[in-house]
Image 1 (cartoon, rainbow, N blue to C red):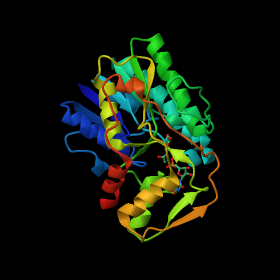
Image 2 (cartoon, helix red, strand yellow):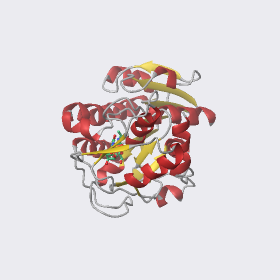
Image 3 (cartoon, helix red, strand yellow):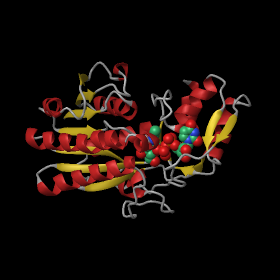
Image 4 (tube, rainbow, N blue to C red):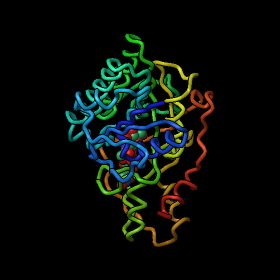
Length: 301
Ligand code: UD1
């Protein structure tokens, strides 16, 4: 297949590009390098430097592609509270441009990187049928993007699939911004002898899923004939761990030089998040990497 990966120079994108190439597909990347890096893109893939909100560039990029994996997004909860319009512009309008380009250019399938943040803070294990309760502009922007995919699946001959990732971590996740994911920030802090900063009491839980497992889920969503168009699938480990528990694991890995400091909780933060990925597992995908293994890989880098 010929596959377009938007955001393919980024964290999840570059791992997904590698997985697609290894499976024998031809890959084109569209990325504005806002948070991605050109050196993340394997030389076998074509890199187009353009913004997802550049309608003309998106249409040109998708030409000749059978499928698109749509990862280009602003992904931070606190950033979305500060910059809601930018978040809606990139995450929602950008998705509209991609879908319309896919329809016009005859691309057959679009896979969206959505998020468990659409479930909000309603307690309990989240299956795809759980009530939706987006709390912040980021989660609302992704839920609206999901609605656009469902709309295009119903209205046109386009297969669309939404993957709701839980907390993704792994190599190449940026650590250099206040908006970066927590495990990337902590591993970077450990490397330079700084304390790991915990927002709140550290008893909030997250379902951390390795980027290697996510890249395999993306590959499956792009290539599987059994996957249901118009549907949504959780991509989760199924295990909720508190930040304090993860810090204890990190300390076992790196030793007593790891220190921590507590700071006030972030507004908009969900307290507990854990995903049920039974639907995706029925298609043959399983989370394979335990958090301790994934963390060990991260601290070695
Ligand atoms: C993350 C993703 C988001 C994704 C969502 C799915 C990032 C930046 N955000 O949001 O795209 O859709 O998972 O659940 O990857 N924390 C600290 N110290 C830090 C940073 C964060 O204690 O230095 C805390 C936060 O307050 C929060 C938890 O760690 O309680 C996770 O934060 P973060 O990694 O930013 O992820 P989410 O907000 O869950």
